[in-house]
Image (cartoon, rainbow, N blue to C red; front, side, top):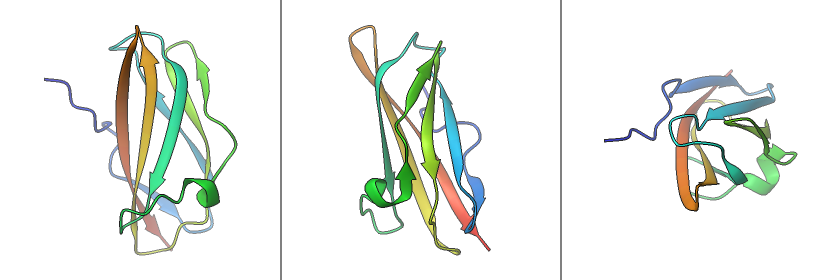
Length: 99
């Protein structure tokens, strides 16, 4: 069984921080065409307002754009999808926003 929640999850992020996250696709191979989605505590897609910059690939890693503008006391879910060998693979990270 493959666990798709990354081992760093849950991760803390301060409300005034802007952090790019790195996802490791080594277990599956070299990723391409990455897509990143950020959902808030209510399941709303807030990607366009809270992630700046495009995701990029370097070897077996996908680096997201900067995640920012989060509200303290809320949880968020950051999903990273990429194509590996013709398959679409997805990982996710739970983020807890702190003061």
